[in-house]
Amino acid sequence: MKANGYILFEDSKIIVIATGFARKSANPKTGNMIQIWILGRDTNPVQAIKTGQDAIVCLDCKHRGNGGKDRTCYVRVANAPLGVWKAYHRGNYPTLAIADYAQVFQGRKIRFGAYGEPVLIPLAMMAELARVSNGHTGYTHQWSNPSYQEYRAYIMASVDTPAEYESAKALGWRTFRVRSEHSALLPREIICPASEEGRKRTTCADCKLCSGTFASDPRKDISIIVHGIGARKFELIQIAA
Image (cartoon, rainbow, N blue to C red; front, side, top):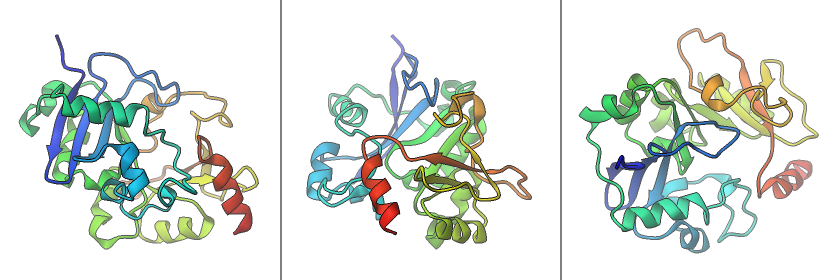
């Protein structure tokens, strides 16, 4: 029986796991993509949020909240992230060597960071996954950190305000901006075509616009109205700002 997931990387703090090989993703927005999860190795993701240990995989992301309070992240960690973490600890996932990526990922599309910060995936590993796959998407809140500038070749700067947008553009990133329903598009932005407001014209798997930045990149930046379980709190924060 074909494995549904593989361990791509692990150390004393984190695990990087790819899933979605044996069955199709049920996510209607992303479509059928391989999902890559960055999880804390020793603490399940639900408990990690309560204790602040989610900083291990989310770093200083503003959407983490504080001990589960004021959290604006859209990911329901009690669902897929917790399931993947438990499956790892049951020994369900074999380790996949980078030399074997081509035979496993060829023809597949990848979502870097279904949960967790994609810049924690070693850059050489991300580059090889991007090379052998049939497309990818990904987002980082670490776009201003000098240590992670090379990741802009593969993933988008996740920004939440026009000021953050301008700062990320100055550093050479293409951006994905989450905005409130009261916020207008910026001149170089387009609405995410896989979103509700984009009339779900496509899926992330087919669109693949959120695939980083290349030299003299003419592609537009992407924006979406906030959605998910933290949407109401995000709206209040944006209005207050």
